[in-house]
Length: 72
Image (cartoon, helix red, strand yellow):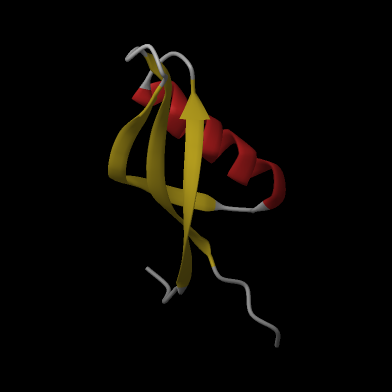
């Protein structure tokens, strides 16, 4: 296997439905501008609670890695 270098960024996705959909939103958006995505690691999940005490949205923080393509 050839040597490779990967970059890692943190993203937060949101969804009114679930943590899974929030993670999928973050990865889908990242795939629009980043190439060669490799791994998405969930690092935190939380919810936004409305004034009535109901959950309004789910948030998932993910670390996404992608192959680093430096100059030269």
